[in-house]
Amino acid sequence: MSTTSSCIETASSASSASAAPARAESARAGQAQPVRVEAGAGLSAAPRMQGVRDAASVAVGIAAFGMTLGVTISVLGFGAFPGLLGAVAVYSGSAQLTAVTLLHQGTAVLAVVASAAVVNSRFLLYSAAMSGRFHAQPTWFTWLAPHFLIDQTYLLADARPGLTHRAFRQYWGAVGTAILVTWTGAITLGLAIGPLLPPMPHLRLTSTALFLGMLIPRLTTRPAVTAAATAALTAAAVGTIRPELGILAGALAGTATASLTTRRRVTPGRTARS
Image 1 (cartoon, one colour):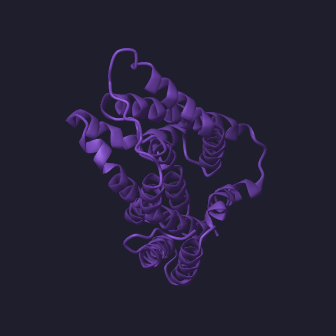
Image 2: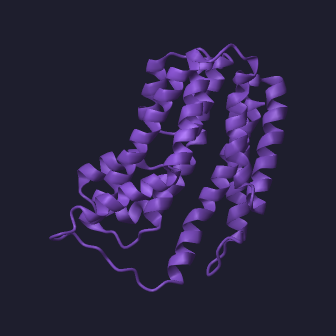
Image 3: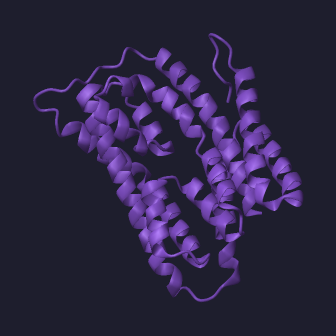
């Protein structure tokens, strides 16, 4: 069940991400020209503080997900070190949850890596949407900053198009660091709580519950529902033959469906309908 939920969530994420650049462009087209905030005297603290405040607005949801993921990692028998290493290195809850779930099921390492990569494929679309703002930055920033690119940081930064150059670097560093600290701290707490919980077999269903919790709020558009249905059917069909390939096949099928359906609904001068 968690395998199917995982690839459905991936497909619905891809559907939302495919339409994100078009929605953002449409929203900016209907607004007045944003005020450009350049680096200068007296501005050094403002973008950083705004980044911290914006990160605080999503901290509760991130902390809840991170703590539950930490408990799941502990319950499935993984140690604290792999859990914390994944929190910082992978920096993606859905990909990390996919990896630990598949490893617990005995899936081959290459299939786990491929599945996690497909889960994170939506970040390619985020990167394309952010490329203009990143290209205007120093080389060191373009190498380091993409590590902070996740769903929340993309949406928060996209809502502040007026931040440019140094101000954007300060904002991005602050919001990314604040979210990473929150995420890592929450997983650490979950890893600490996990061993203290009494033996409860249903705790192993936590990964399924997490994926369903991420999935359901995203099923708000026809492309998302279509992609989710395709992913579920493909994962179930392939999973009966090759269980270790179910999530990968479902995620690929769902992502392809999301891309095709979104492309059909976006034409020059129009944006995806919600």
